[in-house]
Length: 424
Image (cartoon, rainbow, N blue to C red):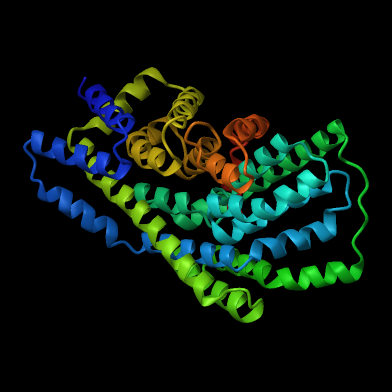
């Protein structure tokens, strides 16, 4: 009964429009005081959140992402990929998806991926005859690759909350990320044929390919350095973020010469704003998590789940439904910080690997990024494409189905997630 009352209070405060960070911290503090616990626990929770080496990767990856965004790296990536595959039937859609995947592997940010590639690809695709709603949906969904393909900020936060290996989570996201790219490509090519926009486009010359490839090469090298460095244990994710930020500065300011002092200041300010928002939510969730742990809410929910969902597939299905519903009014990071501490104790009794669950959870919160009314990527693409919400929502639903299909594949074939981190 206590758990139900706490959850009702939480959702009531969120629906009342109180910011997530203050809702979590305020409710957590109230629970500590009501239970007779020391309010100093709240201060200790806040301090332990900020003083954490793993979370240091968040502002560094955000800085790297925003520097690349302001430096016009997305345009160069899109031009290079288009030069190689743009002449294929439906090749412009393929180029868009591959560009999203590559930029996701550099930035780790869904919003940056959607905004960067969308700015270039939306007018190009519409000019080639692709239906407007399909283009908007493709870019909104393609942007979600930014939090699945490593590096991924939500995976860093998940690793912090569950004390799981961030490197293991990064590597586990590679297989599902590549599968999702493949499914998006197959669907887009089939759709292009169906609506009659898969006509032949003039093939780029080798000179054009070489010129576009050379300009995009430093950015591709950056993605390779970050991923291989983490995979081979050369540096930690936090160190990778720092190296990536320095390399992004060198690429955009010295190699491409596209980053001005004014653009750098804008990138730093945007990164600072987003970092403060994320860390406030994480800190608030830490206080709330401490309170509900003292009230034994996670343990009670774990007992309830193991008593009523004695099969792993039932538990996964229940979590899917719950996250889809929550995604209608909560953004991705809030869902992660509210639900993971509650659900994590139930994983071991059901034999669910926490690394696998982390990737599953990230795919589900990807769905939240493209479900109205609060899907963040919908608003990004709406702004970039100068569209209305109905157009974007109409175009995104086939990709939402493909993402849920990917969840099914990951459940039926768990090695898709676990092979690279544990067996390769």
